[in-house]
Amino acid sequence: MELEQKYIEDNITCRFEEWFIEGLLDLDYDLGVEIMVEIAKTHDNLPQKNDWPQLVAGVIKGDVPYFFELEYIKEYELPATFLDITEIDCDKYLDYINNKNYLK
Image (tube, rainbow, N blue to C red; front, side):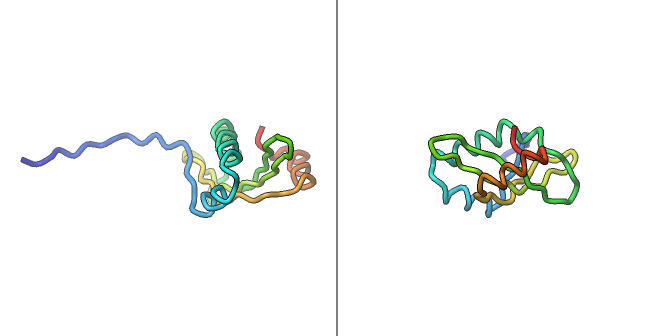
């Protein structure tokens, strides 16, 4: 008797590349979780451009704020793919705010 093959529909909302995951794993666990929560809340609102990586900044507020930059690709009709995460300083984060290119 053969098993019947079943298809489970994919409801992928975003993807993460290896560099992004490695960068996240280098962070404190709680900080990484907070960044993933911010991504989950805002990834649908990120600007879209076909075949072009984009950058957006964010901050995790705490006793010592953590400023970060996300590199991602979000093509039309496809889920966002997060490529990399990098720590930045407050000045660079403020530049992103001036350009209205930050996680809200």
